[in-house]
Length: 212
Image (cartoon, rainbow, N blue to C red; front, side, top):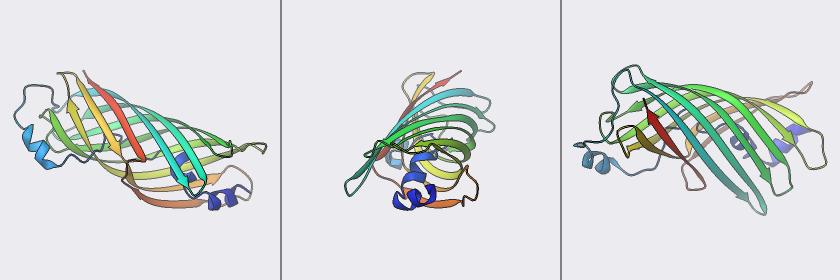
């Protein structure tokens, strides 16, 4: 049964459910000293009413004993500043993964969230984002029967945004505090829940933002 596979592979939920949701606004702990160093700048910055689009790419490699899973994620996002510091975001979630047993998973979903920018008008800004997302994952075990899984997730993550020009900014993220609930789309299936805090270099994302 698929529920048994989840127990054997506890990272499956984190790999099939959009970790980083729409807060994909980045995280790479540069520290507040870097923020202060960029207080006076002449490049970029956000203000109320700004609209931006962003594309984030992530690669995750997880290993437990001899069992290894590689995952790739892509998340296009649209954001709008409703106040001086807060931007609302909507995004799509597209992902794929393959493990050491040649089991494959493809994921598609959408999310909504908000990101708080500590210094939005500056070239560099530390951020904190929170969001929710819903995804549908198709699990194709090697030599087995295809199974679909519906999942819901909530996540909170710190991050950073750095303008390299007046319109373009770089984003980066490492992990998130997340909760996810997934249920196989089969009769009699039970939900499996996962709570995680991942802040290491095994789970890193990079992206580019364009401000209109």
